[in-house]
Length: 110
Image (cartoon, rainbow, N blue to C red; front, side):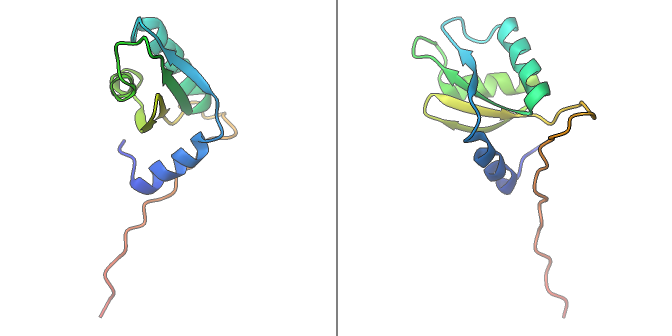
């Protein structure tokens, strides 16, 4: 699943109001952190993470390593924080994030 720029912008806007729940420290990305991220993504779809100064990874590196491990997409990396998105598999979830449709302009009929 590849996000379009409009979908990415929509998710960035939604991410402004959420708290940072994932913290990458000096241990880097381990099994425990991946499990924590997976659980949070399944529950929330959109999570914000932070990389501490004592980490050996940059925020971009951490996000890019974590995304394939959690089958998610990197929405943005800004400063020490990053945002990941993955649609939930839980059909009972009431407040699912509905992404904007990618509307491509069709050439005018002549």
